[in-house]
Length: 425
Image (cartoon, rainbow, N blue to C red; front, side, top):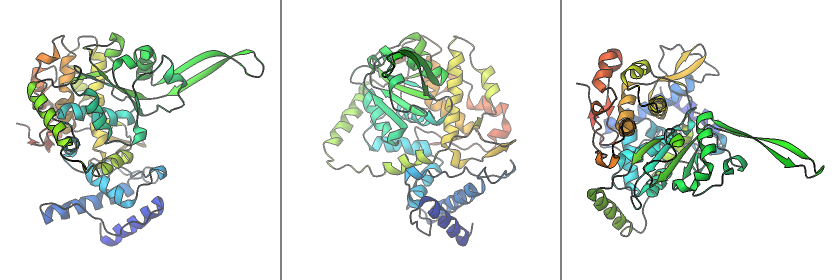
């Protein structure tokens, strides 16, 4: 894209946003001018390809690479500079590792896997089948603190925080729960509403009829209440398990309660008392990035292989397998500005890569593994090391690569926890 074309595109976007925008694309400082030029070129390509990929105007053949449409909601009031800053984040190969590092900056000690699991569950709110999560650990383990810190990466309208609710609070609330995450601090706050929570999780909506007296005629009449989802939940709890019908609708993560983790947590607490003016301005582009994400259907080309290669018992595998695919789906959507948008009979969609499977098993593998057995999760190694899928019912990267060599030929993965580049042997 030449600078004249880029200028024209920026002027067009300026008109859409209603805010003056810079006429050049800026990038953050890097250690290498060459890398800086590459990032500027990549960002320019993102704008160009996104503009040409607008479904309402073009049906681009599947063979032509293109980027998702950049949807700028007028209510978001994002400037062009803010859009550019967020696109740079969403275009990074080590996107999730960078998010995890950002969480460490704002006070989370360790717990990288758990923090990123919470982040992905919150991001999954835009899916048709979002992921719900139980954050488990003893009192003082830092469950609520972890979730609250992760929330700082999201706009306020992405979630609703509660500490307690009545049995029918979800029904009578004036708030919308569609594509929104409900955060409940401590499971005791949701026990009265367990039935409505699991119904909203499974059915994607609540439909309730009640009888009330007409204030004018004084006659009784039926009123129908509908609350649209989909809605997912993140709940913190000290309990090893919750109601069995709710337990299987969630994935569980377990806090690190080791002495080493306590030492790290104390160090982070001390840092808070040493820095009276912490700089958290870097969070704004991450919050804005969530506003740029658009849902696309996701095709997982190896879904049937995973279906046959994962365990068929216990019975909850029927739900856990779907959650595994949902994890791959949300990772694909999060990386949509690094992917092609494909088209099939007018339906625009994204296609998952083997890298997406690698990230999903790195972050949710322990949760999947735990659901297969009744062993005490505290006896398992829950630390931030590379997750070995071969110890579980999940196929390894090598298994997937052998079955789909065409997908593995250009594999280039980054471990979301350590930041290290990963290759397939």
